[in-house]
Amino acid sequence: MKLEEKVKELLSPILEDRGLKLVDIEYITGKRPVLRIYIYNPEGTSIDDCEYVSQRIGSILDVEDLIKTSYTLEVSSPGLDRKFKNIEEYNIFKGKDVVVKTKEPIEDKKIFKGILEGLEDGIVKLKQDNIVVEIPLDKISQTKLDF
Image 1 (cartoon, one colour):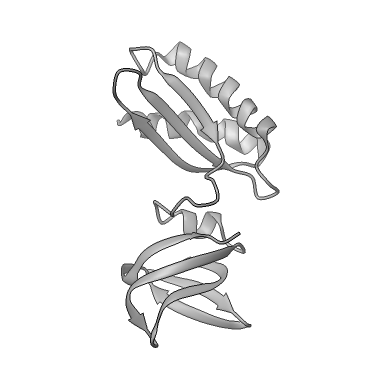
Image 2 (cartoon, rainbow, N blue to C red):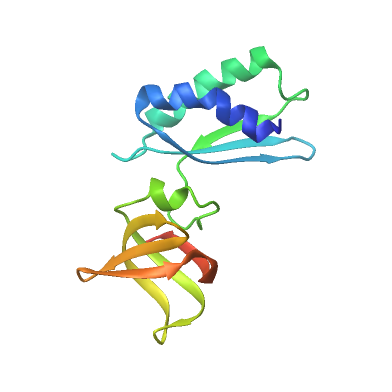
C-alpha cells in the first residue's frame, strides 16, 4: 500500500470526527521530505481544523512509523488558486462557485463559470443562471474554485 493510501486510511476517522473532508495528500521527497494534507470544512476551514488534524495524525504517524526519516507535516486548506487534482473534488466542492476550462470549445465557449452541481457518469454539471450545463470530464483541462 502506498504511503498516501495508508495516511488516507488513518485520516478517515479523524476527519469524520470534525465533519471534515480530505481533498488531497502529497508526499514530496528530498533532503527534508514533506507530507502535505489538504482538508476542507464545508463551513469554512479554520486554523483550529488544521491544528486538530495535524496533532492527531502526527501522533499516529509517529506510532505507525510510516515515514522512516524526519519529515515536515503540513495540514492546510486547498487554497484559493489550487486546481482540482482528482475527481472526488467535483463532489467535495458541490455547491461552490467554480471556473471550468475546456480543452476545446463547447458551444463556442472554453471557459465556464457557475455553481458546481457535481460529477455523475463522467459528466460535470455546472449551474449557470438557473441552467445546468453538462461538460464531459475528459473535455476539461482545468477546474478551480472561483472566489
